Length: 517
Image 1 (spheres, helix red, strand yellow):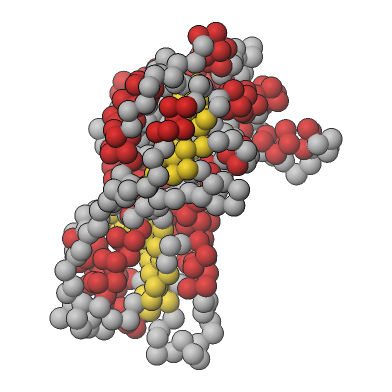
Image 2 (cartoon, helix red, strand yellow):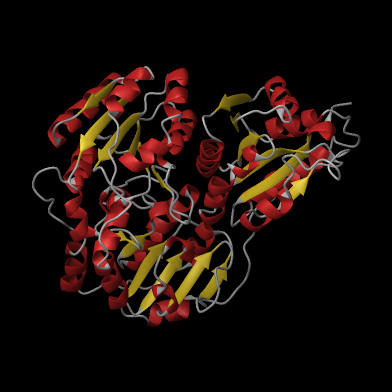
């Protein structure tokens, strides 16, 4: 008879889990050892948040919930930011934490936390292992992947982990999305003169072909949200930009206001930091309802690809001069000198079309989200619903593990890089050919810009960053401290050709952000 830890590990392996990310503690080692024996690889991260971010991105890419595991107490609390990130980025993930021995939890207060109440508000569910363990894990994995996807938490008491799990051999049962007959949205769509398509994170790579066919038939411009960049190639003649909360946001909002109807495909308001969606007419096709508060679209709920294919709209092209005006509005000329926009354009020019880019949080995120052109689904990753710093490098590690054959680029700020230096150890250990570009502006520039726009003297945002190139070399990773954007581009191009890891520390002038964000 397997133990509860073994039953959990066996069920995870049966569901296709290959990696478990985390930091061990004495209370969780039985589970980690069971994962090893079940054929899964435990990858030691430098911080629990990195483990959860890696699990999140694995889940987003594969559709199989990524798994992270930590000890109780501080191990559990260190997961919170990244679990909340998965919650607001709608990412399938399973977070497993240890807990005080069940036999002593009423008496032992050391490191005792109410984990169900800690994780309950930021997960789809929080469970404790008691019985029927394989069934519980199977249910948790299915729940995490069911639209809208999200994190699920399981607490495993250290004494229960090594006890026999009677009745644990429950067969796995998987669910699928079904089409639901709901109001017909074709009427408002055919009545519109200038519809605008907005594609959001509910759309998956499996929906890409049907969505592109619908856009080609409708002949109306489209916007994407950052989490779904590449779902339709951004060199498509009807691409009108990224909405919203990215760079040049006012121009994107003008494009939205120029439409008389929004056709939302998998659109989730969690991605937007402005509530424009509550003030326009919206018809929506999605896998679940997104209606909330003043956002009350006319919705058709079901399989997105099937719903998109079922729509047969009349072509609704915008006037050519208006379309040209709105497409021109998303173009910007980089500033002279150490321009972050120029750096992004130069990196894009040498990076393969199907390569994967990850992005951290800061001013550079707004530029990457808007100006980094993505051409294939699943090739761009950023934290957006929560917008948590520290995401970029763990996301790159996860993407490289899932797609070892693809080039992976992480674009991070110097503030975010300070938060994730520990991840360099795992990159070196695994020999991952990840390219890291650090935009060094010696400031938390997004906050600095915000302070100055409010008439506040910049305070508490500037710092002296270390020499990241020397730090990377100390970890055993090739590095270069570039003196120009051209030098950074050339170094990245050489690393791509050699398929080697590289960190490039690039000085940039944050003053360009004032005109773009």
